[in-house]
Length: 178
Ligand code: OFO
Image 1 (tube, rainbow, N blue to C red):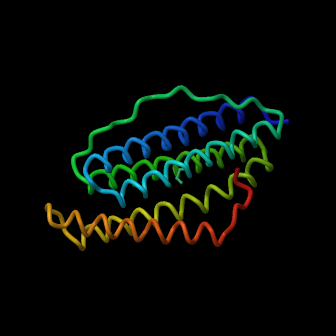
Image 2: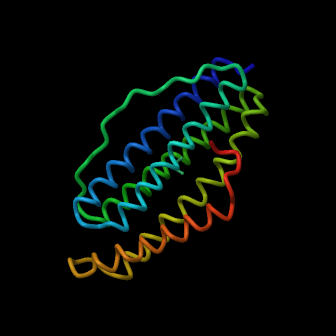
């Protein structure tokens, strides 16, 4: 059985993952409105991934006799200055999620909750991969440069990144995710 302390902390993480899913969905919509189909696909996939991250904790809480709370929906921003600014915001959000996972791990130590500590290892790796992916995307955008002519190439590049992610996920198989 999980402690009330840890249950509360995991529910906060559920809310953070849920917000990421909605933020990325909002970004997908904005990309679509800008004619950036490749970026829109990328953000839709990221949004779906974040929902899976949320559900993974949801299910874990049920498994350890905790109560998973469905978070309130806070409306994310829906206007972005540029595609560069949007990816910068994604990177910042991922850093916030990483910091929150690290906090959770410290709480596991304080509460001697080895089970949750083990469960969270998956998130540690996921966050490392996500941050690296976002840095890689920002580097590519920087190399292409900004300005209206660049948008076509940026979108093509993100579409290629998305295709590579889909392929890698298919190779990994469904794993434990729902
Ligand atoms: Fe789930 O926050 Fe990143 O991936």
